[in-house]
Image (cartoon, rainbow, N blue to C red; front, side, top):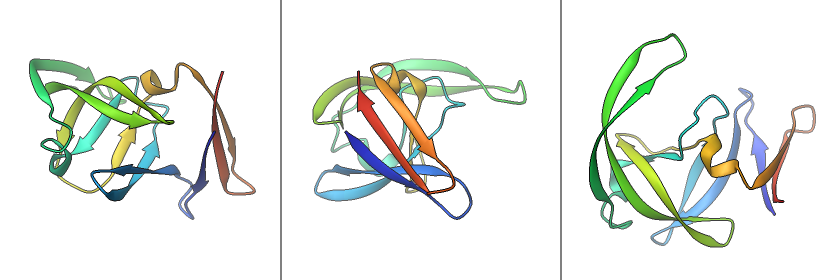
Length: 117
């Protein structure tokens, strides 16, 4: 099981260790992809470019990003993911990563858990 917290701003998050560092990962249930990662992780994850990917944002805006395939550590396993990379320090975890998990968010207690089904 993965345990996390809710920030004072109401953002559900977990910590993930990659390349010897702990990274903040936001659970984004409005993102139906796998992961959005900091550019700094492209090399440590040996990400391979697989070409452009089109995404539709909440307001109906469509964007095109380069997509990569990578091995991503999640819940004790290395998972093959399709990732995009952006400037910044946060990881976004999308619902594609959660398909084998039960997500429980307790906003009043500021806790979350992800349990593999």
